[in-house]
Image (cartoon, rainbow, N blue to C red; front, side, top):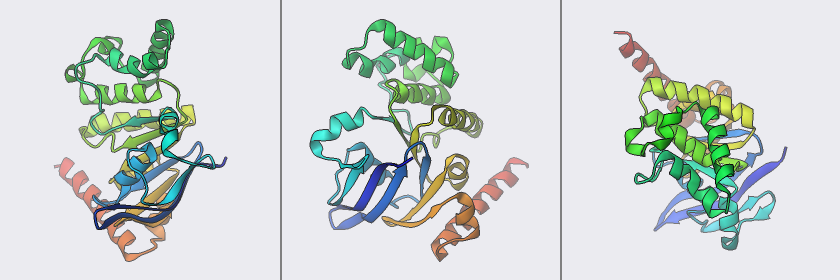
Length: 254
């Protein structure tokens, strides 16, 4: 498979600060790429560029070989599904109505919308009665399951996740990790996932892209980052993450 998306020499500035500095990066079709790094490293900005919420100051983004242009944004966004940390659901709408918004805008018939919702409800293991509730009456895990359903409603080839599990408690987070991995394997989508958690990155990723201060420090499988760090920063980042995981495990056993 080839690259679905390619960044070529992409630079993004906010004022005098370069938040992305000449990024060259390809996202392969059917693979899961995890953008990893500490706060402020540029990973969320990179995701916003993928969505078209930001635009490069220099360089270009290719979508299946063609440069992405402002006039292409609506069509581009219809080819992707986005899942945010807090779910991003409209609080005044039921889960079902949140799911139906885009399909209605695209002119889908009600029967088609209902059939797709039921198909996805079963895929993500959401209780049927949750569809009638508003987001404020759903658990954190249920909100994220609905958000995933919404991202999948029109069957886009690209899925983008911005720290989707970061706000969940550990047990719910573990269950959702297992379900997401199963869904990724079943649907064969191109996935880009942002996280600051090395263990989560290793759980999902075909490839990890570790970022620092707007640059790519190292990319590859988790074993490469651990066993063959490309810099002192990579070594320190991995060591800090593993120490945090060890401390958390020790605390949980007390």
